[in-house]
Length: 559
Image (cartoon, rainbow, N blue to C red; front, side):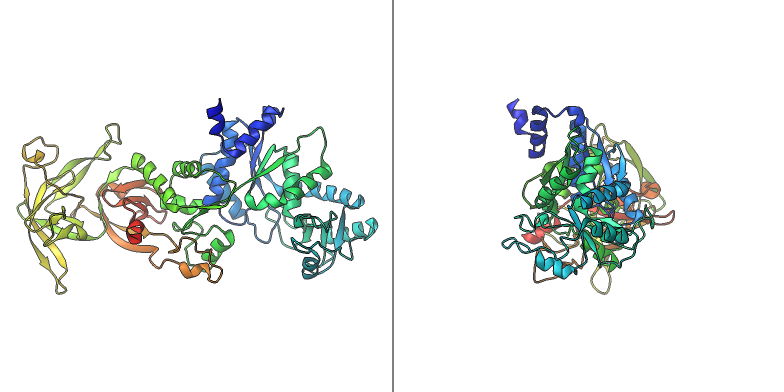
């Protein structure tokens, strides 16, 4: 029993303590409350996995609630993308809800607070209010409008609601304590005027509730048992509790807010504002650009739901802000695709090999397994002919004994095919090798059972038949930033650290079995890395995105 307790994270420990103290298990309910002002990223995935994971662990319902209180930034496009991402990760919500569902109830409760003298309308400028707020070490001072009469506040608030005031001219503030040690308790704003069309309520409202007022009351209305937020909301907890206490019914469950550290990832930025900047300035193509840390970008790049869930679980949750190395995420996708991605042949930087003693008109189809597991994905027929392509870097005219690939006078095995020996090569006027002339041992076919087929040679190369190869566009993606913390420099803009080589587009050759590959199909290009079919693929053009290389090129650079 003690070992099981040790394995619980701190949030699970809180839940277990609440259950031990009498909270009925059937009262457990969680929620994931994104704001639809952008696409979800890998940090949100941590929150998704946490909340829905708790739901699965305790067999408790989880609501998907959209915090849609700012129509200036929110769009239906973002709502749709968030729903798709959550479903793609494999989770199911109990109820799909919106903060806008509660606009009328929040307004009615607000009227009661005004009548009780707990809220007032303030028409000072934002600069004046900020100055009166004080500092963490200096108490604030009261607004000159703090003691308006109930009648005047009701009248002014109704005019705010009816659109009689301009944006920014009036706000409604809670009347709490301008001397409170927690600055969030110093008469926070509850409503502001926004004359923007809402994606769900249209033009019904021109006043919108602030996050703090909406958050706790929404949790209370939905009877959320544990409202799990990221760490920046820890200082908001006093206000969360104060707001809930204003409407609390002892016969109902009072939600409990608790916080965990947000997921930060090295070599990227996690601010939706900065990610939007990358999109708007066309530094990336869209929110789902495969270089983006968005869930849609990771999906397009070839990441699997399982790899993201394993990453979130492995990285764990913490009470302190930290940065998770992106290498962990890359390890998780490599590990998953190593078990699930079919292995195929592709050449990214081709040079032609002519097998001079192979009959010119002859072609054969060789049996090639899709992976190395006995219970794998079966096999396919790969065409072989006199002319093939190999990688340029796999050939040298001369090399030392540690070079086990093709060099003049030496032999290598072609994967699933024959042993060949380099005899000579042809170069262009720049000294670049354009053709390699080889001979083959026609008795050395892999798997044929002959003595020659069992002969050991140190190098094995991937290849494609030149006659049968399909041309494909391959987008080789690398990290979007060269700095581990691009937004961690106070004196520099994060865009100064953009990686100029984050995308390289090349024309490659792939084996013909890939002609029917569909969007999001994932493969291992043998000896090269993992690749995914991109949505830009058409019936006449194959496009692949590199998900991750087999070798870590960044580790080499660091050394």
